[in-house]
Image (cartoon, rainbow, N blue to C red; front, top):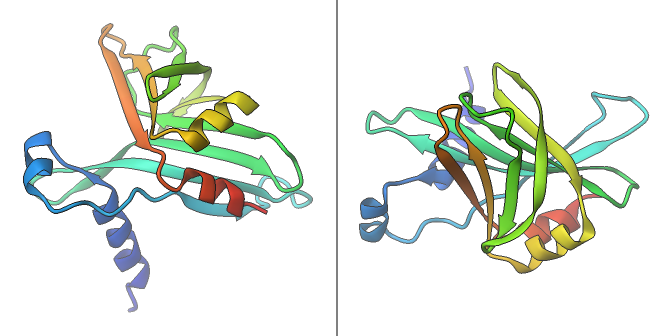
Length: 169
């Protein structure tokens, strides 16, 4: 039995693992964050939908990994605009929108769409000003409220963001 997909997945998880702050200081420089690109016509045979995404993966001391958040940007081939789709963990306050910012400058908000076994999803169109800010910025943050009222922020590195966006057909 060939297990190459598991090796590739393991390499992706190892490169995107988040470590505690103290461990990061002692560790060697991490590989740059990856924006993964995929395209599919699964939703409609007549349209090719492409996305690029980055996930935050946490790994515990036992080596078990879990995806906790994903930032995705989608576009139908031939269209000019992008949509943002953020997959975030359960226990979020669905009454409060997700606020996006780049380098601590607010871009706007995304509304919650649904929740399923993979988490909760916030979605919305990406304004041209947002795209320009993400191309020029260093960090994209998604701020939200937990059901218990705590503030939660997920931060995604924008290294390679422009290159990934430019690669979409």
